[in-house]
Length: 345
Ligand code: MRU
Image (cartoon, rainbow, N blue to C red; front, side, top):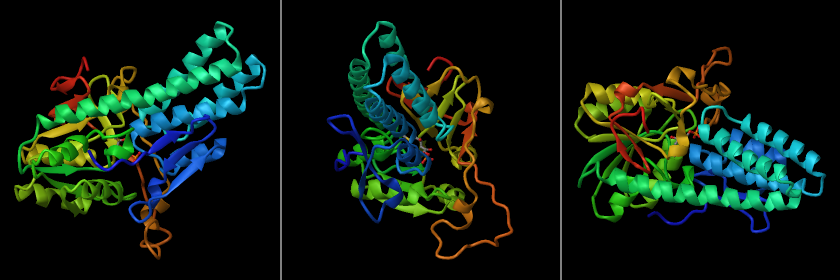
């Protein structure tokens, strides 16, 4: 697997979370340590930590840190405070289900221990163990996903990717990039075609960084070059991650994913979604029920440019995700295997 970068880490004493600040990549590898509720929220909102599994792990760690700060309160006040912190962190981004799922998991542990009259300091320790467990579980899920994904590729294949679903978007190993990195280690000589992923450039800044570091033959394309690249026969499969899988197998992922699925169907190229089962939302019937995050239009008009690249007056629409309908997905790969039907994932 690629060189070890610890993306999200809880300090041994549980008082801080350290993350790789992904907004600075690929130019700077900088770790930042966070303790305050507002800076923990901001790290998710600004995508310093990002990728559905990594956000879930980070939120669980963040809640531990905030719980520790409240541990000398009475049990009632402690529980009220962590409930508020959990709701606050959960409001930072709406689309990736892992954020809410892992916070709910942490809160239900705290609530059941409080009912058994555990003390606040005892609950804090149990929450820390649970959060570390969430991290370790994700490591195992990503390893299994990468192994299953390897069954879909052969030597010399060209794989197109969108956004970043690599090691830094998860605990370790990644999901959609896992098989590509593993394939490289096993001498498969894969070729990655990386869509740059406007407007925040997760493809150019993050996927290219990870795949180049792993020694994969990597080519960056603008998002509007996907069709010509596929038409030239360079792409054997599309590999993408996911932020929420609805019960019917519709999938929300970074905006632009659905257009790759439509193109892949046109060119008869298999389109695969990779994600841990923590990304499945059984309570969400279809893709139409998924809330799509809409971000600041300035990300389109100004970010990464030395001067604004559009007139001030022009409106910009900036949905951060889109939904790929299940009928365009060849298979969904989770830690349990390669699934071609989606109702019982
Ligand atoms: O807005 P981001 O960068 O958090 O979006 C991330 C993605 O869309 C990823 O593909 C997804 O979270 C899967 S990460 C393994």
